[in-house]
Image (cartoon, rainbow, N blue to C red; front, side, top):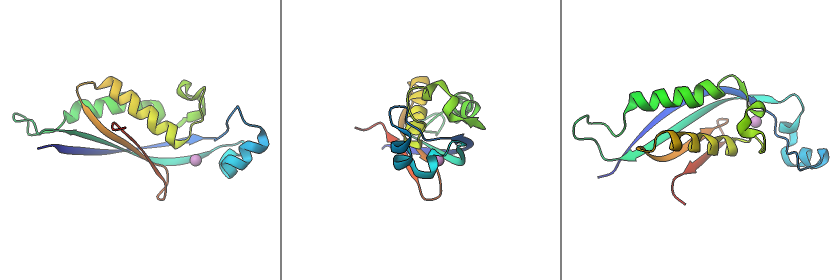
Length: 136
Ligand code: NI
């Protein structure tokens, strides 16, 4: 039987949505108020879902201590209270929440090869969320 373990983390970060390849007018058309030059902030909720069997010895799907430590080191310390536009990960791509979600997924998948990372979901507001899945 396959089981799933999910954990939520929160960060506060700012960004400005502005694509270098687009003109100022095209940027305003694409991103609206999110293109304003002063940027804006979000309280992001990051959900990490791990799949796998329940370990017979520990009774757990994932080593929670290791997962927490990895997320704290690679994700929270990096992005919490950060201006996402200044992070090298977003030097060549716009720090939309789609791209933030992809970046978090790849950072965790590379750091935890023994973990079956099912998905990473990032909630930008109470109405918007983005999800990256191992499938597809
Ligand atoms: Ni935004």
